[in-house]
Length: 372
Image (tube, rainbow, N blue to C red; front, side, top):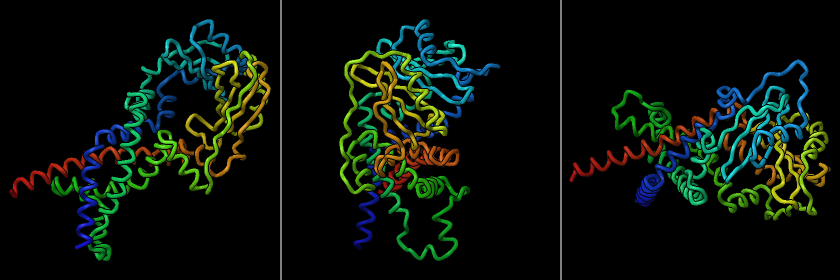
């Protein structure tokens, strides 16, 4: 009796949580799946992502790249993405009148290959749909709370997946009913199997993806994970500030020369331009545009490029290391193409759950009306 009451309560919770957030969960999951292979698709589709390597493959200094760009455009440069890979173009993140752009530069000639507003970049639109439904801060909060509800819904779904009679696992037919989908079953049964079986296979991955995703929305989730692996409260890191100093482009090349040989396994160096005269020049290195788990950060004087501080990967404690892995875990890049494929499939499963769940709800409503 108590077990039946508990199960019915879980069923109601699962139902109404799913109905409440179904549309948002569908959008988040489907956009997440689309975005999973964005790096590979961009490289394949866009010719401006790569350049022909000249006979004398000597790249221009970054100062020259910046000055060359300024001849073509009056946008303000916020970041510069510099790749070790000889065939990769340099990417500038720029802004004008509150509109952000990606500007692609030939590292050998300084030619501006293409300039695209982020609002018209397909994968950027997909990313912001995934993050905030294109609604800014309020959209981020809507997504965050919806995903918390989704986590509870997934956990309740796992509870409901376990049959009332555990003896069902003792025979092959019973196990098959729990772990496989009968594709030739009637529509209602097929819908039920799709929801139950796919939900079981996808739930654990989706919970991990959901938790890592909301760390960017809720600081308390990030702090909770930090405490879980370090057993101590997270300390607020002090910002590095400098005396008022104007930024000079030659500082980029001084800093590049200093750090590029320190990390031979890093392909990408992202230079964050100072946004005030009291902010340092900052550079983050990583293995690629979708792998940040082993990244280092360097701080330098913006006028001469002299390093004034750093946060190296080997100096991170367990909590800091976990935080640097959030993106790699969330996108699956931590496990390479295999991990991305898992995330892609999990996203599709996650997107299917509100749909199959809604049809199950409609079927039950029709059945109850018929009985009445």
